[in-house]
Length: 196
Image 1: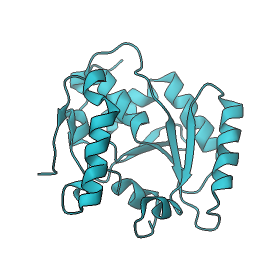
Image 2: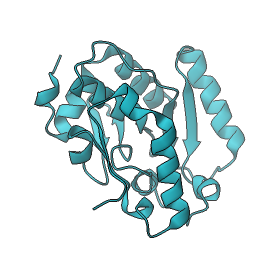
Image 3: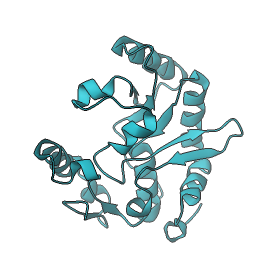
Image 4: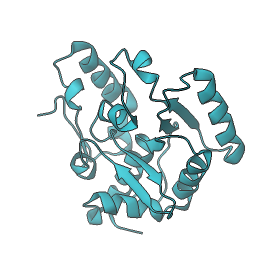
């Protein structure tokens, strides 16, 4: 297992996921669905990196495993529920959450997203705005619109859209920081109030 200090790049993050049997099983389940532009994102990746950086031997609690995809031909919420059900049949102990990013702009009260990458770039925190998927060659691919520096340096910072210019989004970021309890689980985190 890679030690925390050895996480310096995107590829290092991919390696620690590739060494995790549970995470690779989840990525295989999602790949099996064959959804367009599909990824496992947010806390799934963030928690793994922070656990390793804190030297934890056991996985921290994940309230859900966020699966996203982009399909503007079918934006029915019912489709997401069917997909969650299929994933639960494959891995019943995983707390699956499936969301089509082609409809999430309605939920988020935002302009429509053009892709999963676009949606990820609009997540509230830089350390959350990342996702992974499994390639056909069984290697992990990572996207991180705001990079991985904050994640690997244990910094929680709002993405530019959530850093103060928009009062509503600033409140969303502040509420997430207040309610997620990240510093309780990972005490070495530094929480920043704005993106500068």
